[in-house]
Image (tube, rainbow, N blue to C red):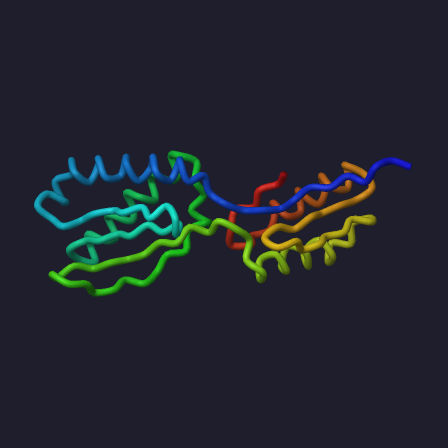
Length: 163
């Protein structure tokens, strides 16, 4: 009997690429005329997976976030994996915003992925939630290719990676 094939569905971002994108965004902000003399800054808290943005006004925050987003896209980091926090007033007439990076599948998203596979009723393809990933297994690789195509066609709010 042939060995059943399987793959894991996960999510995450390459922290090195995020770091590079933040460095590029900081360089651009230092050069831009509309940010001259402002307190605009970007801080990447790598351990917590958080980008902390500080700007002088709502308008500058929008421009700052656009710069960061553009640099992340150019570095191949999916913006689906960004959890954008609310705009908060801070000391010294500045505004702050925290952007969390989604590093793993949360329980809710994992359930949605597993449910989507079950609803599709693919032949003998099963999905099992294992912590922060979903293991999808089936008797043939063709069935698993169908499952991957199905998952790619749906939007789960995060970028899915198949391993």
